[in-house]
Length: 294
Picture 1 (spheres, rainbow, N blue to C red):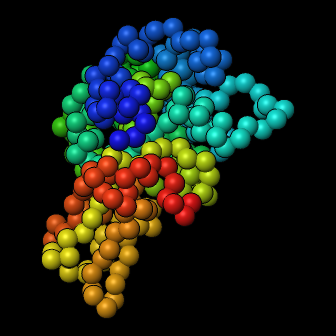
Picture 2: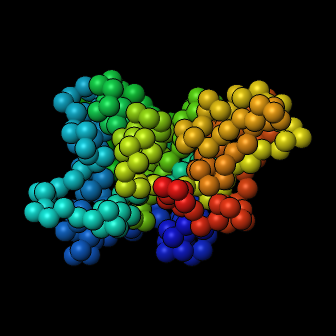
């Protein structure tokens, strides 16, 4: 399992632990190193600033944040640029993600108090399009965010859990990768649905920059007895893990490249693709951030 499961999930999936969504964690005073890193005294303060600076502008078409930002980044540029290891360590401590298949997304939705569909700051930055609502925030109504920005009320929609899952299943069929994110780890505050217009995906996968999220706790594999070689799954994969054999008329999924999102399954007409636990797969076990050739 990923290191967050060991550190914050007691050896189980960290994002399915109730304590990582608790009000106690949300309101507690951060440690001195956390305060310096986050520029906030509590997770609540960090999240409120995140919405105000990154989400709300995307809903009302205000001036977007700089494209280099994936959220609030207080402070000034250091005189000496940090190493990739230092950047990664800070990201893991402040705002880091993990890919989830739709089954685990469903479990998260059942855990959280409420779900609010919100505009995507990434899409606003990368495409200039406002109110592209690919983000699902947890407990936003309880935080008082809805009443604080009346001009953005039309782009912040509290959903019934059943409706939230219907939309997320539609995103799954569309090929969007579901990711869950922390706000001063391990507090979990949002599920995003990502493709190349997502800044974290673009920076990490497309531009091969510093990692921004863990792979899923699973990998996908093809049952060649069921696969007809229709290639439908190939158009879904956002990670270049699906390959076609012309000689065999079958599709192969490279476990070392697979992020375990599972969206390839949504378009397979023969249910030929399944998820298996990453830790049980001899080629994929232990690969969480980069493939061996990366």
